[in-house]
Length: 170
Image (cartoon, rainbow, N blue to C red):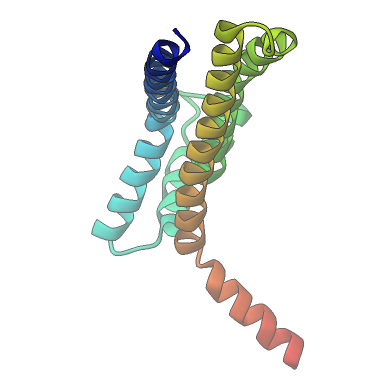
């Protein structure tokens, strides 16, 4: 009787793992979908800067200068700041969306952790939540790293570092 239980238990664990992997994938896709508009806007700015043969910084400054005289469409200060700081806006959206997806998973995981030792379903839910939290964290880091790399390139941060080092040596 005990030998018949082992294959059944392994099959349940396999199904549980598949469900966990599917759910982690779903959560990661959701984060990418929610972050996509601001990342796509930033990518569009980068392409426009390349086609205009200028830097993103120059492009943003020229766009900002064009709208400074536009009193017909007053923008809120925060919205205007996000338009001239698209990298910061993208990072904020990515981290905010990741946080909004992670928080309910933490609550659900913490709500089931007291029953994990006695209940296979609670243990499976808790593990799924933990894997999803880790997957979302990794996805947010990947997206954030991409935007951070773009910031370094678009704002010529390496040139800042070189000029700062040269100033210190003088």
